[in-house]
Image (cartoon, rainbow, N blue to C red; front, side, top):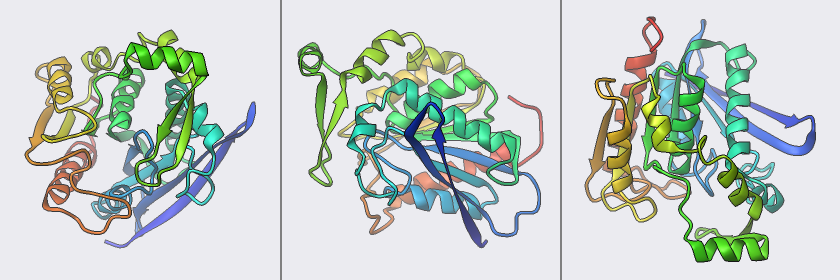
Length: 289
């Protein structure tokens, strides 16, 4: 099935330098309201990293729209590829990311991003984006299905000496292993988490979910330990149709790199399961979860 893409962007009126840039991938022959999936990238990620464009393409080929975007705190600039806005990265708190997600969701539901069916939405997140997806879905309450890859089960992953130095310096230096670039993460990121600790409790959010979750995780994940998946699984409501699976021999991205040079068997399997999950839960009309 042929697909097309439509770009979108918006600024925050009270903060003109804060910008969200995104893209909707959808079937070229779409005539009516489409089921759609909101796609969330992870920490130091962006919508065109590695497997994300392929995921969006596969969703569109299956008759679903994929709504992808770079969060306003991603640090990615107008070229959609480079970390050319370190000041935005410095201010990229979890609360601001959730605000971005809700703003994009509202645009999609309003029809401004294309012929999307407001009540037939799914949510995908990778790594920290997976944790954010779980929190956002619990707050929104009306997604029909979720998929997470290598999702965090908690956002507080800093030890006390790191937090102390972070507070002293006012920032934490973050190295992008791919580019070698050092990015500053402001102390406001830590302070925001501490103020919003209850809201940002991923496991508590899981307990409130109404939509079925497919959780995939690599057994050899070097960035987010596989035990996170087991804790998420234990927190999901029993009897809700959720499913989790560990991909043996796989790491954090199921073999994907940036740019994506090849699709590994594990990545192909994850893509197929993800698209099938959303097609099953979103494509048919029916009652909300």
